[in-house]
Amino acid sequence: MSVLEVQNLSFVYGAGTPFEKKAVDDVNFAVNKGEFIGIIGHTGSGKSTMVQMLNGLIKPTSGKVLLNGEDIFANPKEIRKVRFQVGMVFQYPEYQLFEETVYKDIAFGPTNMGISGDELDKRVRSAAMFTGLKEELLFKSPFDLSGGEKRRAAIAGVIAMDPEILILDEPTAGLDPMGRDVLLSQITEYHKVRNNTVLLVSHSMEDIARVADRVIVMNKSHLQMFDNTKNIFARGDELAKIGLRIPQITKIMSDINGDSGLFSQGILCVEQAASEIAEVLKRRGKL
Amino acid sequence: MMRDVTLGQFFPGKSILHRLDPRMKIALLVAFIVLIFCTGNYFSLAFTAIIVALTVFFSGVPTKMYLKSVKTIIFIVIFTSVLNLLYGTGDVLWSWGFLKITTGGIRNAVFVTVRIISLILVSSSLTFTTSPTDLTDGLERILKPLGIFRIKVHEIAMMMTIALRFIPTLLEETDKIMQAQKARGADMESGGIVKRVKALIPVLVPLFVSAFRRAYDLATAMECRCYQGGSGRTRMKSLHLTAVDFKVLAFMIFVACSVILLNIFL
Image 1 (cartoon, rainbow over the protein chains, first blue to last red):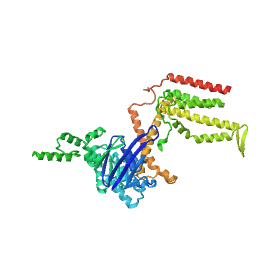
Image 2 (cartoon, chains in turn brown, yellow):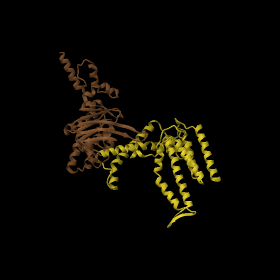
Image 3 (cartoon, helix red, strand yellow):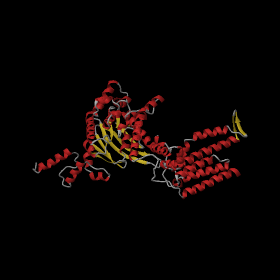
Image 4 (cartoon, chains in turn yellow, blue):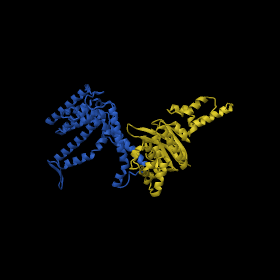
């Protein structure tokens, strides 16, 4: 059964004013437990608005969000419980830090859930470990950390709630290349260990290609495509039309391939490309 | 909820009011408000009310927006008009205990109601049809003579521009931070007053931090462009009075004369 499902989801900003704008228009999809979903789309395509509806932070104008088969807006008093189950890391989450120490800030979410004592300590420390925050940083003021460390601390604050579904809205934006790679591996590692469901919004096709099982493509408030990562990036021309590109390696391989059919469609990483090339060379007896 | 703030909301447009020079608009607004309070009888009051209605009509801003701004002060209007109604002098029409309604009271109530509503409507028409930058620009030029008293008019105007410019930014930021804390289970909608004030800390701390960060960034950006304050500064868009301004000015003089004549002869 799908853990998260949306049906005919729509959202209109400023309904009834001259500034009315449809941000999300009739979106339908279902996500299975344990999946890693990538969400891509041009700036202003409605990605961020859509993910904010998934944990009830904004109420859809129409349509439903089903969490484990239940409408999350059915009981408005229980909406906080939904937010603990669907963790949300916003863009530039470091701007939400407020406590005196990093430790206390990470503990904010779990404390709101009613967790205390040893369990709280365990959660804070394991969240810090997953995001690669060093022990000694935990008792510093979050405002004394570097940009990358702040980002990690903020993400740890959501991970500490141990949500069944984790949504990350461009978690690597503004980090250096090294920091991006490390953070992304930590997220995949976390996903593997906890076996929870992750939705990752990103502008980096390379990142998405590396980690996602399936990809949602948003375009002009609509859901344009929803398919396996491989199939999505095999449709490079269509993606280009809506202002998105495919990972460099996918593009190179598809250009070399042309119509020859030597390589498979939608090659996602350098390793895969290397092994396919080696395969072809072997077949021709040149390796 | 934050999006409902209409204070200083500017509606771009091409109406006659939009095309007026902000200095002229501000000066005329002040003059007209004085005029509203100079009305001495029902005729001149009705006449100014008609002018207000015309202003609203010709501003090209949805009437709904005006109603919204009137709605915010409707309580004050009712309160003052009821007080005026009960504390007037003149012939007693109705009384109950110490309460009495007099002809003078009715007159005062009508006057105060029409005046306050007119005041709000014309002031709104100024802020609806003038962009915040034009508005502070106009104010700066009007207040320039105060410079001889060593008042830093340009700096004050610049501060006002920046403050106005950052109101929507900070509101948006507040919204974002609130969402982020709500996502971590912050409960801002329930509980007693102490609990609610405490619940604001996770919002206020990041908001202050980011406000200071923005202020430093802005200061650096301004210094990088060699901003030195008002002295010797020229403008890209200098304000010019055009034919429209003089036409409207002439019309206002006509209105003022009419009000005075109505006051005297009717």
